[in-house]
Every structure is written in structure tokens, then in C-alpha cells.
Image (cartoon, rainbow, N blue to C red; front, top):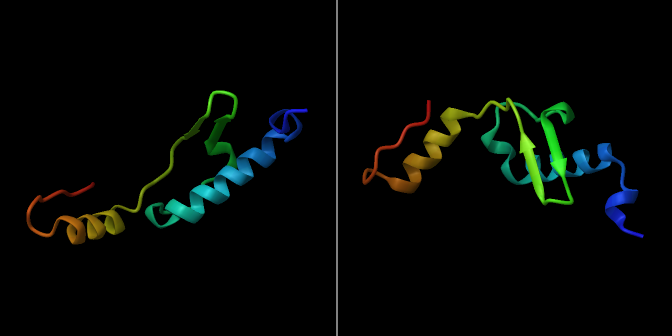
Length: 75
């Protein structure tokens, strides 16, 4: 039997939220809620809606990455 059919939707969302928070969490102002996530495992797509980015953190990382060669600022 296919594991994707056996796994309830809320478990898929919790797993995706954990991975998103673990790998990209420092870029967000708050932890994503399960209501903000839409996952379609059969098509291999995931969507996050209305998630606020931490612009200060992103700008700091971009400044360190590009130094003075390319001025980029996220607002």
C-alpha cells in the first residue's frame, strides 16, 4: 500500500513545517502555522501563504554574501 495514502494530511503538514522551520526558519519572523501550508504529495508541490520574512536578517546575509559588489536590499 502507498504510504502517501496512509499518512493523514495533518501529519504531512507537520513534517513539512518541521523541515521548513529546520532548514529555513531563520529567514522567517514567525513559525509557520499548519493553516498556512498546502501540500500535494502526488504532484510534489508545497505552498506557504502569508509568511512574513525577517528582512533584517536577509539583508544582513545578503550584505555578507555580496559585500559591496551588488547592493541588494529586501524591504
